[in-house]
Each structure stands twice: as C-alpha cells, then as structure tokens.
Image (spheres, helix red, strand yellow):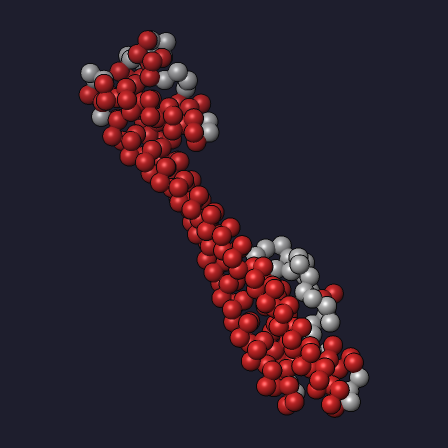
Length: 218
C-alpha cells in the first residue's frame, strides 16, 4: 500500500477515502473501521466545498471588476463628449488638449493604473473648472473610480482567500489521509493474519492509484 501521490487533488483524495470507506463497510469484520474513513472524508468534502466557494468568489469579483471598469470607461467617454462641446468641437484647441491628451478610446484602452491616474487628474481639473458642464463631471468620475478601486480590492481579497485556504487545507488533509491509510493498513494486517488471508486481502481495501486522475485543481 503506497501513500497517496503528492499531485492528487482533494477531489481525488475524497474518492480514495470513499472507496476505502465502502470497502470497509462491505465486510462484517472491518465495518468498525469504516467510520474512521467516513469522518476524514467529511472533512475533505467540506474543504472541497469551501474551495469551490472561494473560486466562485473570485469569479464574482472578476465580473464585478469588469463591470466597474466598463462604467469608468463610459464616464471617461462622457467626459470626452462634454469637453468636445466645451471646446467648440475643436479637438486641437488648448482646452481640449488640456483635458484629453489622447482620444478617449486610447485613454480607456490602457491599463487600470493608467486609467485611474487619468481620471484622478480629470477630477482635479473638474473641481477647478469654471465651466459647469465640466465641473459636474467630477463627482461622476470620482464615483466610477471608487467603484473600480473597490472592485479591484475585492479581487485581491478573493485571490488571497483562495491561496490561504489552499495552504491551510490541502496539504494537512493529504497528510491526514496518508496517516489514516497507514493506520488502517496496520489494523487490516492484524485481521488478515488472524484470518490467515493472503497479503492481497489487505491491499484490496485501497484504491489503486493507477486508476486515479492526476490533480489539476484544489
């Protein structure tokens, strides 16, 4: 009986434990050992569910960040429209160039940091502007920027939570599964020897790792 491979995912560990539990339950002489496998399996199943919840939180945060980014880009586009009108539709005017060093489509196509930096500057210009239609854009830009920054922080927190959970759950549970398997192997060996069964009798309670899939997640 070999230890579980270090590349096995928690779902694979759960399958191994469930196999072991069912095999133990199937024999009267070993039924008293089955709850040990069932108890650890419950812990692994809980960790898998938690992992799935963390992954969903990441997907949710990514979707919300994408929407927040889109809303900020739309606010910049709206700002560009107001600036163009204020500049008398002259994109070469000093007013237009001061507010928009590049076309809105270029400004919104940059990195998040570049977009946020531009918006912060635009907010400052809006607050100091004598033109009401431009001054009114300041709070709209600030609100959209705050939404993106909050969504980005949620992304970071979700990523950190998943990494922390993986570190805290995966290796300890794999170790616990191997410890349990070794202990049960020893118990089964005693039963085998008492019943004068062949060595393969003990081995048969453990799932063959060749049939297990290589881990890709969890």
